[in-house]
Image (tube, rainbow, N blue to C red; front, side, top):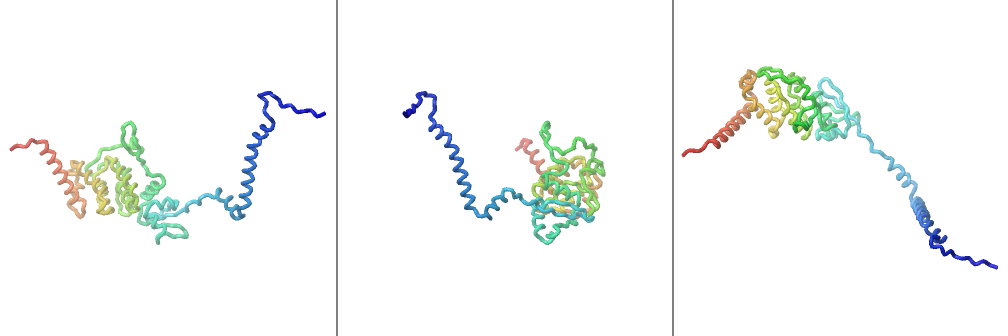
Length: 291
């Protein structure tokens, strides 16, 4: 009356209960995950739930814009506060009296706009124009657009050279000074050691500068750097010694030395003596001693 169910003996046939068990294992795992998630959400307060929803979408607030008034004419610059704070000088200015907290303004009446523009470019980009580039063919460093800059031979008195491009006019002094020297001194004021190294390296790549500009720039370096910082000063002393044949024929050099009044020339005298001692020592080392 009742038919007895016969289990198939086919080895390839999968048992239905086993099929259900296997197929249901993944579904059970998904169901458990959903259940656990719903329980967690139920235990979370509405305030916590809103905070969790807001936190992934919350973006960091942008840095405030600071307006800087630079130079006698009050040329305006704008920069992000966090960028300016890379400099210890501006870090203190943003917290100190020169900084107007409401309007976020900093006044730099004694700074040259062209110089500050280079400093600001460095703070944003890590370099300033003309950039320092590596020439792979020569395996050397050079300034951007240097190859396209017309060169001219230096004149011991006023000779052309590249002073017009390598120098900057300082309205406070009414003279042309080598641009990298002024940037170096500005970097010293603003506490930017890397910018000082960069400016010194770039100045070492300059060529064809007239004697008058070099001497004015050397005097400027001595006036605007502390005695403890000898790197820029040593650069000028080495330059004058290396090009001594040009400088000793220069009427400008003679007039400056006769006028005196600067530590530059005493340091130059000491450097020349040291150079002479080195030459004598090398000469003595090559000459066989006689008894």
